[in-house]
Length: 189
Image 1 (tube, rainbow, N blue to C red):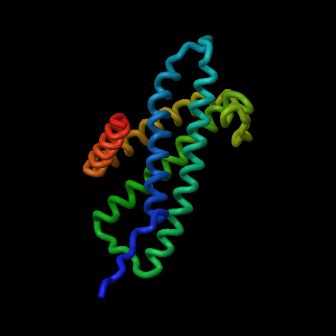
Image 2 (image 1 turned 90 degrees about the horizontal axis):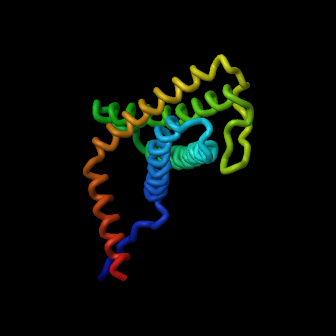
Image 3 (image 1 turned 60 degrees about the vertical axis):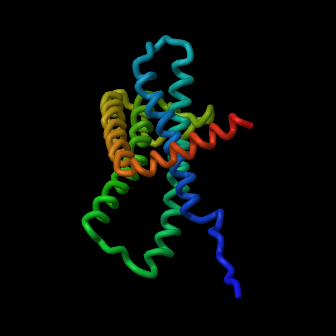
């Protein structure tokens, strides 16, 4: 008698979460690379405004992906923790607080962009050319505060991302090796 083995579903919640995780990581990589560059560009440089709009668009895409990720997480947690509550060990608390901090900053940093851009001028945030409604009223007195909030929250977020990457280094290395194998295999064809 043979027993039928269940194959893992290709549309599991974990796969959805990891897919969104890596798309978000790509967005953040773009944001962390373009932010310091565009902050140093002269105001009269052609294309500077387009780079700012691109940067803000990627930030909005990351917020949309974050919403998708949170909805999926809530769905998974509902199923997982309805059966049993997690053991709240010090390691669990460390992991939970790190991820909570990351999620707060994933929302907070883009909000500082809205605060900064809207304080500078009305209709200052666009999603690939489409004007996004203002969340804050224009106020020149708040521009420097918005700039400082965005600067420090962005670098705080980068610090947490770096720590998260360090903690998951074994997984990052494995993913990098799989990508290298995939790329080498596609070149050989």
